[in-house]
Length: 340
Image (cartoon, rainbow, N blue to C red; front, top):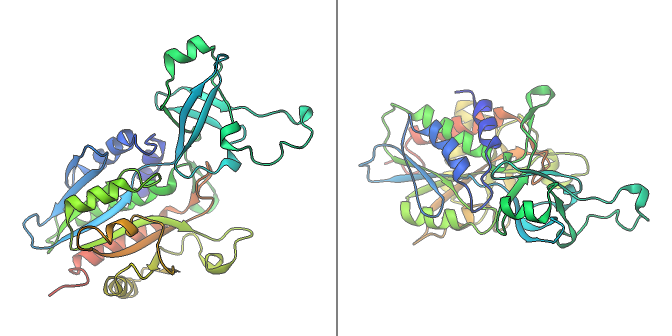
């Protein structure tokens, strides 16, 4: 399968945290030819492949939810109040076009510059924003309710140089990488039972990874997420991270040294370019939850470089997701870090 096609299909799905069903349905269609697929009451999607009777299990995790907004109030004029559902960047909300899960389109209200004295030039706090769906209060209450989810209306778009931009690349590009892993491992003789977990609610609480990892009770886990690539005004270690130069291998006290070392060794042998990300403690990903599940799970982390995270213009290169999939598939075929 073409990984860009998978990424585009996943990014077009809704699936704001807590309402991942539409995205999970798209992912399931891609995974079903290669794995046994099931969901749970928490919104997680599981795809099991490999030797299901093996004594060891490896978990591959990527969260499937996306950031969005949740309706909190509707006034008597039909305008809507919202709050963040996940780490929405309020700086990009002014005049944003949004859509509900049912496909209704609205816009974030903005004072025209002609009527502004300049005091509104800063990002408007989320509790002062209003949404306009073009309907009266009576009409809006028939179609939208408190608790409904909204997200960006923009669609995936190709840029020059093979790059793509879209809302929800965090973390649909990682989910696409794990779908490609399933395809690469299809029909291969594996020493592991492999469970792909496309987990729910990472952007809000991480409950999908917590409950999913507890259920799977794996011996090892690899978490795939996105992290920061270079862009103007970025300094420090991320200033050296480039698009289309391979995944980022994570280093952190919570991550397993042997697994990290094995991934690096395989990348060198397979010619997979790697970039590196060092963290002094928590990773800010599902690795933080999975590594302390039950009695602890040996965990490694790979990140796909991305620009403009948590906006409607997230940008990455599909080749980085493809290389991530290749590295993980090779790791599993090698027997993992603890092959005896």
